[in-house]
Image (spheres, one colour):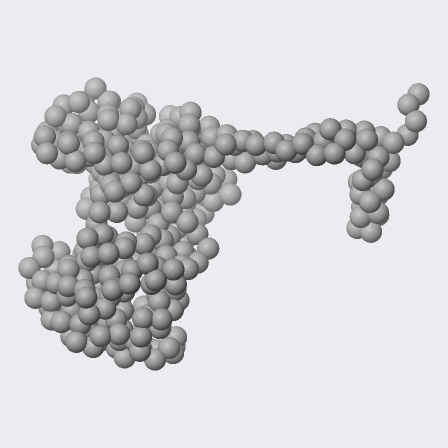
Length: 432
């Protein structure tokens, strides 16, 4: 079910090469289809949204029914069990507390001759949250995308979701009410992304679009980037468990399966220097996987993009983990801190046997919207900083300009930009 591979440092090893070849690019046909949807919404607005909803969701909405009636949200939220309601409230508290620590402050420094330089931090005006439907309708993802926007101080938060999503998933209505989000539109897919990017008669244009979705949603976000900001082009979920002989193979297997069950494109990997542990984990995966309701998905994921890599030592294991730069990296070894210090690239680190990846999914506090597909080499988890802008502040004086002006003119002249130079010299002319 899952392959054990002896890894000797060759990054071209076939199994490894297959795993890292996963891409979200989509076929030219899919990209063309999404582009047509996006352009139709840009041109025709609400009419295009209604047509696309009928075409893709099989529902013909009335022109005035795109906005969800939040009056019914209370009835839907009442269907949530007390235990689930309590768990969701705890998750919101934890996530908010963590993200409060990400707040940035504006600052200024004073230089010579009364010059003031600084940076102003301020929130974007409008954020759009994409809330997927179907099997991907996760209230935890709504929390992770909405809370940092709220902590950042975003003035208007708009949510979009396919028709019937809130009816079929009452926990989403519960979270919307708990968070105080009351502007929700019943439209999904690429058409919803386009509506948020360009605005329609009903749905406002936003400054940034965040939230998970299917391939069409991801491609639409890619196409509208530049018109609006986006969080990322997220790929399938992935986990790497770096383990030694102290790890419990049952727990390692369970954690790998927790990601494999997400999607047939998901990747679940164990890295260890202990061949006996590798065999034990493989056996446990074979035992646990068939018992899962989503066993077919998990099996396909493991057979295509799963592996147990046996390395020479912990140092080699850490280097392989850095090469993969995974979304989730669990470290379950004897000297956890020493191993963690060797890790340079990971979306999130889960340290020790009790830090299962799923505690991050469901509200430990840090955001579970993480870089995938090796992008942790240069990207970070979603956070408050994704919903703010940084504006530079420059306040010069005549004295400072007189001091540095000749150098500025020299650079401008060297670049062939005479008007740039004149903008300085004209200020240095004697007052009349």
